[in-house]
Image 1 (cartoon, protein in one colour):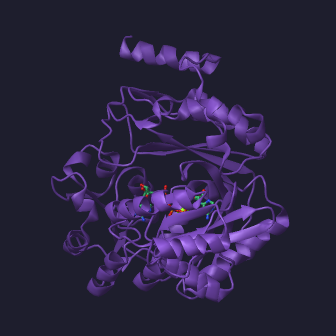
Image 2 (image 1 turned 180 degrees about the vertical axis):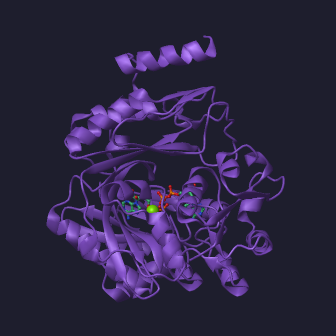
Length: 471
Ligand code: ADP
Ligand code: ADP
Ligand code: MG
């Protein structure tokens, strides 16, 4: 078993990984830049080491991090999500220096992190992919010819893209001409690569992804699916497990496809295979070769601690479960509470958290690195808290989500919490009918009043807070 792990990340996911290490008797080493001196992950780890004064650069410096792991006697590095988590060069550097990278082999990251290479592998493995280009597009003329052949609408996508960026829908040749250079410039700036490709736009699909686990002995299992169709601008807001809108046959089919995809590339550790669904059609979209933000909801419905499994797999142990051991129960929803102002085009709202009261009670889980008095640094992602609820059936899970969002108090910044309550109230959502067009298709849900009618619980909390703070 691993003895000491460096966590090459920050915020809530660093805390999540530190917690798994603590439960397993593995020592944890946090890293931080000056901007993160007061972050919870720094306080919670067994050791913490500085990556310098630049707010971001240290987290993106492979050599510095591998060196630090060696100097502090770590036998492994957990990359979390974002930052270097899907950087094949970083994984390769770990391999060269004999530090275990908690994830797949660098060659597999290379293959799946490049979206066109991943499409090639899946085509070869017999996993259905969206119609589109073979490899990257050479120029605009090639894009226009291909779009004419497969028909509009099409998507132009950055080959090394992620986080919902570098993707544009084009409904006509005129739009394609306009968007093509924009995606190239966005891709170059955000991902350091000008490569783009084209695929058919699946109109109003559902985003269904499957969590898989694979050990070094070649065992691969899936932990069922998550429905991440509630998105804004291709970024996930609310995630649900299992999907309330799959038939048992569809569920088994996507699960088996994901296992097939993972086996085809010799995958190891935790990963997610993302699909688009429309009617009964399923298309592979991409594979994320890392822990995902929404792994929490899969943990709630299956009881499997995914980070623990990652650490076990990286230690060379075989999976703790066979496929037939994996049962799911109830429904879980995750709300990405972002420091953003929904009423102001979701403008980031960084600042100091003057008061924070965490919801609790049955079926509630919180993953966060914030606390009362914490100043959210402006250099990183705006997601500041993940609220997860679980209940035995869909209606109760939605009600529990409402209740937990009502319980929560986060003062000092604007957040997406109240907006999510509007989504939960919508009859289509309550009935479990939604696709990736839901958020854009319901702009009226942004017309809510900031002043909520406090429930009895909320009033009690407010009174308690006021008593403490001397309001
Ligand atoms: P998930 O697929 O786990 O839901 P997201 O797509 O929301 O994850 O991304 C999680 C974090 O990682 C975000 O901060 C996002 O900006 C970042 N990220 C994801 N993919 C990339 C990438 N290819 N390059 C840079 N950052 C990325
Ligand atoms: P990222 O790496 O940024 O997560 P993805 O390829 O996973 O990018 O796409 C993100 C989201 O964009 C999807 O969840 C989906 O909503 C939308 N999307 C991507 N490709 C298509 C497509 N071909 N047709 C329709 N929607 C798409
Ligand atoms: Mg994706």
